[in-house]
Image 1 (cartoon, one colour):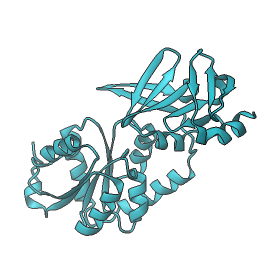
Image 2: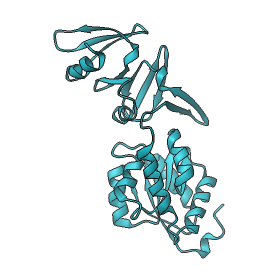
Image 3: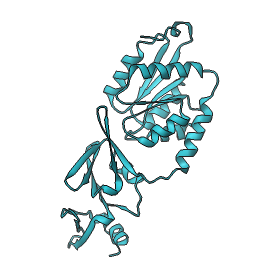
Length: 259
């Protein structure tokens, strides 16, 4: 049910940012229930989000976290706390984001989006419309993001309302699979919607190594290395799986594994 105070308040200009069109469409349908909400635009990447924010000057951003061209943190950094509107972060699986947003953001939403939670976010935005109270929160969020341990400790794998935590130390390797990455531990596998490059940036390089444009392996899982004439390596893992590296990664592999 729409918020009964909506009719009496000024319009709330909203920008939707998500790289998945169905997600934007679903959020648009939920927001249509609120008479004071005006959706001024949509964006499907971090770069588009920054440009659209500058162009439309919305009061509120519904901002996805993982996107192919800059994540939610990148958008906030690019805008800066003084220019960023109020932000409701949307996330499917990032446990750090949930903790940080609880403390510092205007609000956060877990996907799939709950209409009642959207109504709560809008109520917070209306209350803070003129106070600028989110500015300090965004600055704290960025400071925390810069200062935190940058090395991921686990992945959160979601299946509807169920969430499974997969420790990074349990993984043998990670491989690219379209817009997802496949996490592999022995005979177990999980799909997570992130890019391999983003995953690589969150892992400890002392423990994980990019060996191919589509493969990251955990150093401790490599038990044997065989050099091929073309400059590649065949890496044998503790599970018995054999992975072939890319030639351009040869020097990094030699250095990381002490060959």
